[in-house]
Image (cartoon, rainbow, N blue to C red; front, side, top):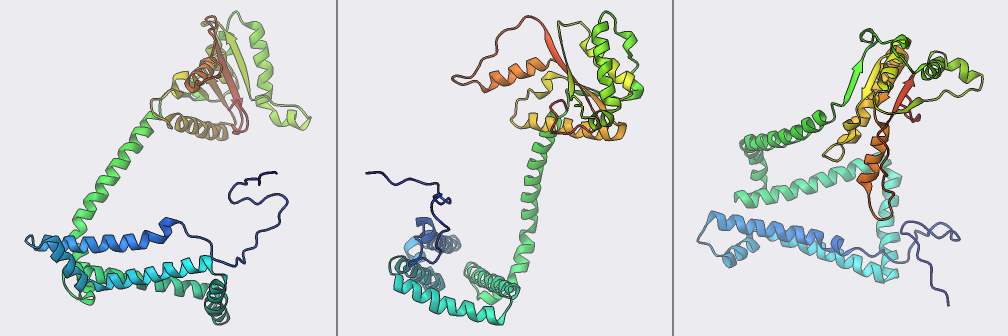
Length: 356
């Protein structure tokens, strides 16, 4: 005997067609949807009781509750209407004839009548106006109960009350904005740093300044052609690489090579320190990456290309592996003292290329 398959909510089994929305009964409501308005009205009544006790400190809770039960009877009227509505839903969930009668005859007839007389936009505006009127009436009754006056007079006194509370509201808004701006400023300052930009006029280094690495210089000169004439290579079916990987012990001239490449091509030179992406707060590293890509795109569009130098790219990879950790996660092994750097040359710095 096979057990029925359990499917994810919202997805139908592959061998079944579309769901039939014409249910014989109403779908069951969650418990929170059944009691939320009753709890809200009960909380409102308790607030009114508390207001009465605040006006008269000698008034006990029982007398205040009895007084508000007489003066704020409208809360119990709305609560009774909500109880009747939930009883209607409960019966509709269990009695198909009752549910179909209200769905097809009462509400369905009203729906068909309004569709014949009004457009969808007019019906939407009517519904929105009715909701606004309903909540304004509720607010008027609450204000009248709090101010101990009629709901109509309470609505006329509402502008003066709001005006008197305006300084307090502005103080709260100012405090919230100040706190938000503090966090924005902290993250903005933390997202800066670790990236140095040199423009073509500031770069004096050339390939003649690089000594002892003639074979590397020759390979780098071959890649300059990709930066100078990428369209010609791509039209012939060639592939333009996104960057060059330089590996070697410290002091062998990797940074000098990238700077010389920028000087020979007349492109801006951006130096990215590996510590730029190690941050205390989560999300700052992402802000730095986005800020870097935004800067590279602007420089590439303005100067026709940009040389980006990621110093110690292997240390960045090991830092990410150690940060994730966890059982079974590969741990970075110790390597001999050497460093890997990535020099990237790009025209428009597209995000799809790994070298940008």
